[in-house]
Image 1 (tube, one colour):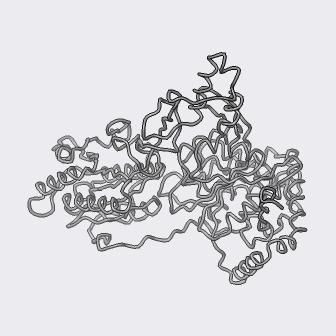
Image 2: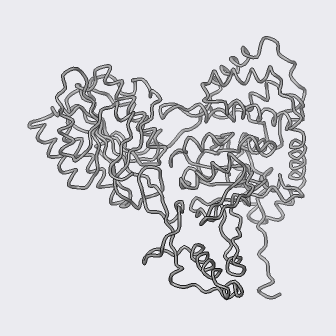
Image 3: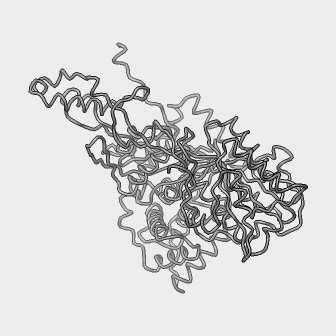
Length: 637
């Protein structure tokens, strides 16, 4: 056989039914396949827990004669053209006509779109994904040409929470969420290794051993898909769902709708024609944990006690009468249907204390974390001036080769050629002449046809907070206000994918309470443990913050820093404390670290010391109210 006629063999996928454990994840994927309107599944957890294996194994189970059931993987580094589609260069060159090549979203139509590490997906792709998930279609607009394609898919994403959180808009688009972890049972772990080694030794033979089970599972899913439209959701169960969502303070009504759809899919999966309480309970476990989270202090997940309390509230809303439980066996192939998961299992490995700076010295005073949580207000755009080259994020303006292409412009040396815009310009020029219209196949590109793309993107930054928690700051009302503002700013940082660090100034020295991290869960847990009170070592706090920035610059030179200082400006620790604070601020300014000072001074008589500090930092100064209510920009937005 010639080299041109050889075909690459299709790799054998590990059978879905052969995966040991992970029953809740299997159930979530099956229910999403039965009722795609649920909105897909977000899988959170550590590596090596068969997340990708299970997702890839789902595709063959939901295939059909129409060719659906494919699993299309979207790489986090994909270009926008690859995701949404692009102009067909061959058609333009041959016929002078703009035609489109489908992207990954269109290829996933009626199948599964799988995104590994979805929390690291570039923001311009998240925006496209949100539009497609909401409308079931993807619209391509390039150089004055618009084209729409169907893109109705089951969205499945995996993520490690320690590497950063999802944007709230994207998190809300996932109908179900499952936290996964490696099993602790020894026999189960042994069986996982045994099956994996058997598969690696003979993939085809291993798959053949599970072919009958796979066929049975695929048939059952297909039957449930056909039946789910006829499943009745009684008013009583809708009232139960509404009562549960209200009890758990679920925002909006999307949660109610997703729970109802999931409960109907669960009833169809077990062969019932009417939704019952057990279907609602299974749906609540999967659909609501990720919709309850308000701010970084809140734990994700839903414990057994919380679930029981919510079901009790739902029972009160549903009414006193309860139907007889069905006789159907709710246990799906492979294990129980959403049995006991570890309550709120979002445990993360704590970051090691790197040096003595992280050791908090005992200072009398209330615990910072005992203050009330965020008010719900959002701090507005905090940006570093100029244009950076950092990692994709949602804070400051940045150059990007993968950002959104706004339009084509005349070619400039040193910038990449926008191939499609160039070809279209040449085709348009040729069309203007009779010879060009007669001989489109002889299209020639002139220097005047060259175009380049204007791309716009955003980057993530290193945001270092210096928080003054000295005695002058810890009056009850002021401590509450500072605590609320810190929560709001940290919440804003994780939605923008920043690294955050927190330096605390109180007592005799400053401490690095939170080393640079992308995990806001870690940040708020450590910050909540800090004690308040004592003098104000403001100079030490600024110096330590500058050192943190310099260390990060060595490891991530393209990540630009932003220093945010929350203080009333009173430096009271040690001799010449005010002068030393001003000197430390001047050093920060000379290092090129952009800063913002949040003036926390309150009361009728104000000394204006925070404004003086801001002058030495070269920083803008705002009150806490202004920061929560006013857009804060440094330079061009």
